[in-house]
Length: 89
Image (cartoon, rainbow, N blue to C red):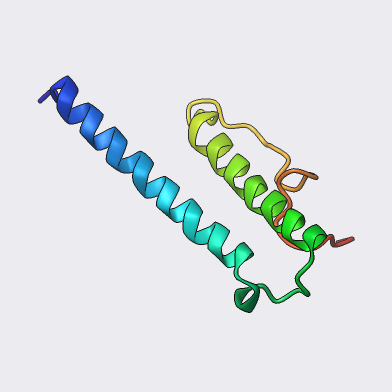
């Protein structure tokens, strides 16, 4: 069954709003000093935002730029998509 354009628009807007709310919650973890384990500073706050954006970048890449019919390796750890602290292993 096909959705009407209005239904599709409504569902996409709801999904977008949910994603933005989730990003807002993640942002709040950076902006609230009580939730930020590292000493609060401008630099640490900027690093937190960069870290969050790296996760967002990786999620978008996996969701929209992957083809199950033609799987391929990708660099999971890069300066943009760091998972945790640097590790020589």
